[in-house]
Amino acid sequence: MPFTKLPASTIPNLRTIEITPSEEPLLQRFFETNPQYFLAVNGEPAGPNEAHEEIHGELPTGWRFTKKWMVGYVDAQNNLSAMANIISDLLAPHVWHIGLFVVATSRHGTGDAQTIYHGLESWAKASGAQWLRLGVVEGNARAEQFWESLGYMQTRTREGVVMGKLTNSIRVMVKPLAGGSIEQYLALIERDRPE
Image 1 (cartoon, rainbow, N blue to C red):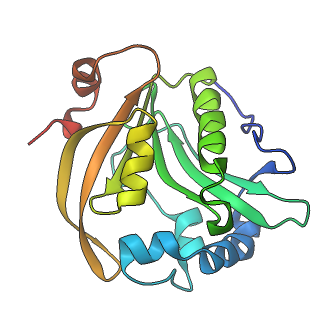
Image 2: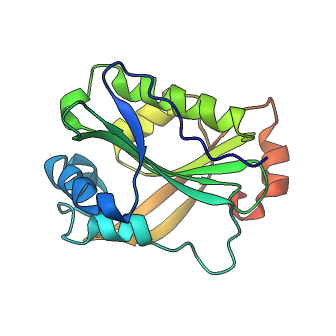
Image 3: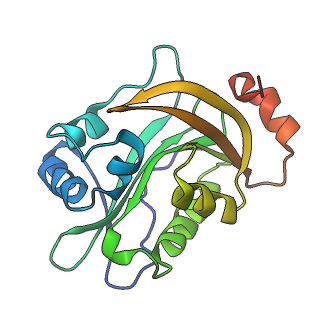
């Protein structure tokens, strides 16, 4: 299903933008002023090239996908309040992957993360997604709790993933959007089978 439209913002006073290379300084500033994610998963703040790597980063060779979406949520002053990196049709049709989802620290505990996420999920489903998958660092309790509360289920753990100063275990999680079973998902994405 071809589509080009960004998701609408589900938060009043925020609008969505596509984060392109010209927004790299905006994204870098957002990463630097909201370090919690990077401290939790990398053991250090965002590096000086973090936004560049996020925008220009390549997927592993041979991984098929339709589009890498970089969605930003900006306020009236054009400051980022949240961002999401979403890849459509990753490895198989109708399987979408959330590569990164960061909400400004000032909005934590307000319900904004859930509201923004639900808008992204509705957009992905309307655009053809039947599954959403992601990886969450084991021990990042806030993130683990967040994704579990939204209905994500673990399929496997990837051990020994180097991220910044840390070596992490990654919980691969998936959520069916069209009523499918985990077994049906694993038939599509063999690499996510439990080891």
